[in-house]
Length: 107
Image (cartoon, rainbow, N blue to C red; front, side, top):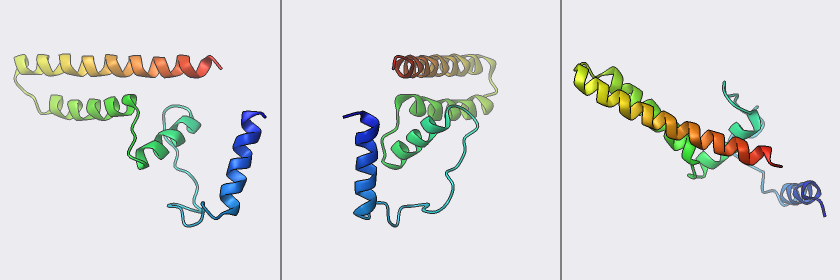
């Protein structure tokens, strides 16, 4: 049995059992993100609501926090260290994103 057929069957079964009733945001369009593939963003949103964040999303949040730290740092020596930390976070995030792209392009 093809995966698409199996997944469609599971969706229809859950729908018939009422598992989609009273979901948060039911009847409203899904939000759009400015970056990335829409289907990936939906997957990330669902994972986040379930409390399971992918490593690259954790790194994105860490990067945003580090940018705030960097913005508030005035001392040139301390600022250089904060910039190094930001670059490290951005590099790790880029590695995670590239790994995801390679994984999904193999199919």
